[in-house]
Image (cartoon, rainbow, N blue to C red; front, side, top):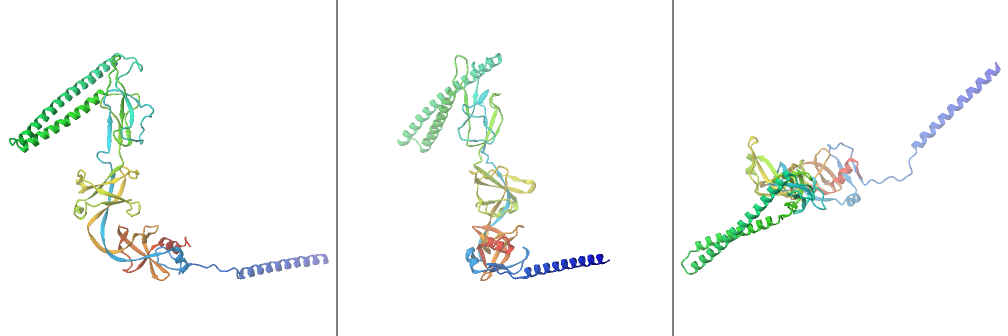
Length: 431
């Protein structure tokens, strides 16, 4: 019994010592946490009165050093006479002469131009650049002529010969006509100088002479073009005819392949010039009298928000078009597209100027900032070093100034440079 009693006393002593050690450890931890930090407190250059959501107003107070570092700039909200504009949905379209389909002048076989690959869709081409070659007839080096090919050779020779004969006859006729009108013009001048003829007779003779001269020049050009088609007397073959690009642009579509036999007049490829684009704006016919259609239009993205990337489009005289079912008429504008920024079929927002100006509250456009929900705000300086975010509604932007439909009172000082930094300070993602 004495041994058990001693063991019980020893175990109780160990438990009591362990409990005392745990209590001492907890006391040391609490005291270390409660001890004040000896490091120097951080100096805050900006502070807010209380954390709020973005829809609530908040007063931002900056230190003089923060204002100096941010280089804040201010402007006074004032009333000005502002030109007005109205946004409309618009479509980017190609001009009527921007797309050309190149056709084969004669029947024959297509092949690639020496040192060039077959033109691919989207490839940029220059004006007069050779894209393909046309072999009007098969040469003995390429193939042995069959019976049907010999018939085609004979038909081609006849067509070329007939074209050359017609060109020669037209050139002679144009030459005789030009010489006759020249003689008549000289005679009319002599009669007028002698007092027998009239001024009207001289003018008529001069017009006939100039018209005949133009016809003679065109006949010479046609004769030279036909003469470039050389006939091979030995095999009855023709030299390859280069197919050049008629304008500078990009290949929009190709309708043939190399080695293909094609007929005269068959479409080969289409070249599109997108360096100049048209903007078609559809609007309700009842609003047409309210707009100044002779002034340029501002092009923005579909959200209608103005930016430095906006493009100015000039009005042009285009064929009138309309949509009877929607009582809409179309206005056309022209814009340069050297950087290929616009594409056919692209939708944009066109801000058209309205006749007359309006007296409205305005601020510099740089003072307006946007939140993640599209809301528009400005920062107003209510006291030195204190700023408040105010909601505004921008009606339109012209010449770097925003017309406000609602906002702070006239005379308020708004921040024009550094507003984004103030928003970062207010919502905690900047210091």
